[in-house]
Amino acid sequence: MVDQTRLAVTKGELGPICDHCGELMTFGESMVIDAQYVCWECYQKSTGAEPSTDSSENPGLPIH
Ligand SMILES: [Zn+2]
Image (cartoon, rainbow, N blue to C red; front, top):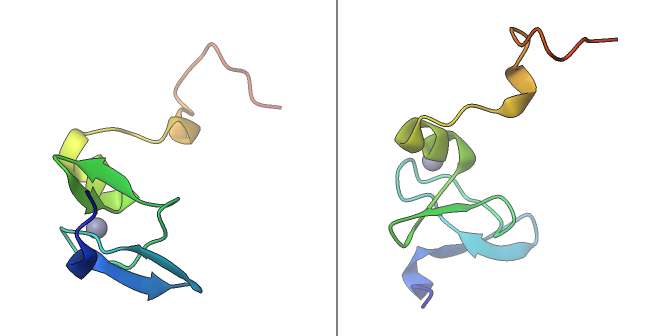
């Protein structure tokens, strides 16, 4: 169930508001933690997840 008070119009479409920092998002940008909408940055901080695109230390993936 979507809490209508946590939604706002951003970028021309209705989307959720980050529960941690108040960032306006589209549904495509939002992540969900414990039924709360959070932005990707807050999701990373909450979960400790790292973007896989930053794996420059990985010797198994040669960069060309
Ligand atoms: Zn946030």
